[in-house]
Length: 149
Image (cartoon, rainbow, N blue to C red; front, side, top):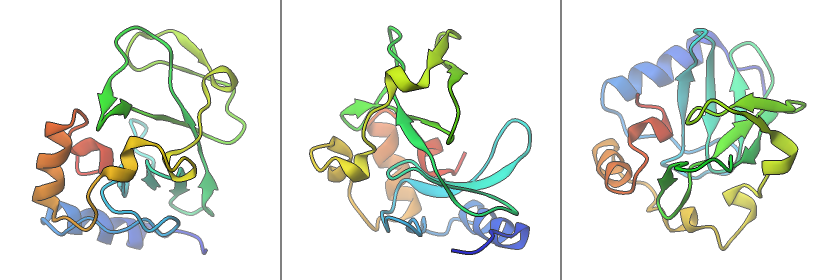
């Protein structure tokens, strides 16, 4: 896979904001989990919350690792805990929910793509953007899961 360009990110992001249907992940080919995103530091990237594919504009893809903090009240999405994705080599992160420092190694789980019993395998495929938005809102994650917000 090649370097992800700013032009590609802008095109993917503009398409979603214009109402286009979500694209499939270039790694696992699942829909409903993948999309362009921008973090708080305004870093542009694309990611899949099903397999852990992650690619920052101007870089080669990386494989992020699925983590589930063990704090009380961590959100659920579509029948499973919402996943936090840790970068390669990342040892800890601040929990978005409670603010405590999370030890990545102690909270790693198999990504849904690696675990055929994971409930996210039941997420319908190839829906429209509006259908995915309704699905994720009904199932606890909201549209941020695949990058619309």
